[in-house]
Amino acid sequence: MKNILLISNQNLLKKTICKIVNSEFSSIKVFNESQNYIDALEICKYKKIDVVFSDLLTTNEEIINFKKIIKEINNTILYIIVFKFELEQFDVMKIGLNNIILRPISVKDIKEKLINTTTEMYKEKYGAKINKINSLICKGDFLNSYAVIKKELIDVYNTGTIMQMKDKTFVLGQNIITSSNTYSQKRIKELLYADSLMDISKEGALVWIFEILDYYFNAKSVDKYPILENVFVYISENLEKNISLKDVVDICAISQGYLSRLFKFEYNLTVLEYIHLKKINLAKRIFIEEDISATEVAFRLGYNERGYFSKVFKKYEGSTIEEFKFKLRG
Image 1 (cartoon, one colour):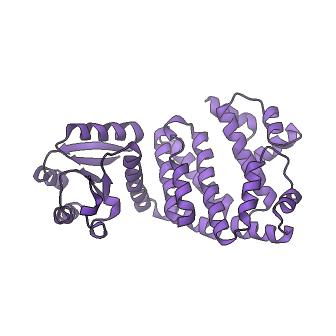
Image 2: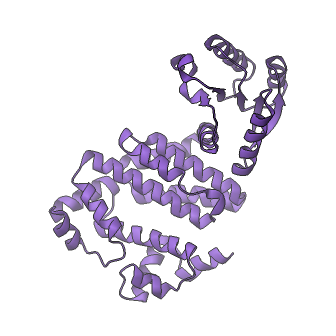
């Protein structure tokens, strides 16, 4: 459990932050409150505090000095987040842009800052695992990147709670964001906040993290090879058809050999393996959102036979359709 110290004399602000933290995070809590910095420093001396929220500091000098004192008292504090009306009055180079949230505050702002904080804490505790994921992503190994992330989330679910898994899913999604380049970052952030993980299941979280990872790989690949943009668009828009490699090559005007080499280099997959992965992830989302038979989903996704769809599903998901649907009911 990570602890927040809230320093403010504004009751509405304190209530707002407490409500957001309690409703959106299971592994973070408002541990203590203070109305002045003298009391706050005493709390930091004797209690385990991970994050400090404050709206009382008014100048660059005050903020920098307070950060210095806090760090001397308790070096485990990773972020000090300050609320102010005007960004121009701060020296953001010295204070750090990540230390500032502007009023009026929003749920999205608080969540993003706390996710950043949780990400840093997670990196500190699980640095080797984060490095392994990042290494696989950098190497262009899509399937193994997803497999490692999936195992991490399932391990949390098996040993903790669904809320802890959802928190960690956000952390891993945020880690992908911080690994991304300028081209993909904006869209990934949109994906990050598109779904409320508070409303989806373990299987929903895995579908969601697949989509985040897929978009990152797409954007990274297109950034290097623009010709792939039409390929990814065509595949995404035609998942409900029986897409063949020849279809992709003909429609996107790219040679089969060149396309296959690019997919091997960027994803460590064949084109058809990638199409199947996308279809199966979409199938999982359909099963989560609709009460529908496997036969109906098979035909909706361009598989002419239920048996073949079932075989492909088990190959890439590691379980049968019936087993997956049973987990949804549980």
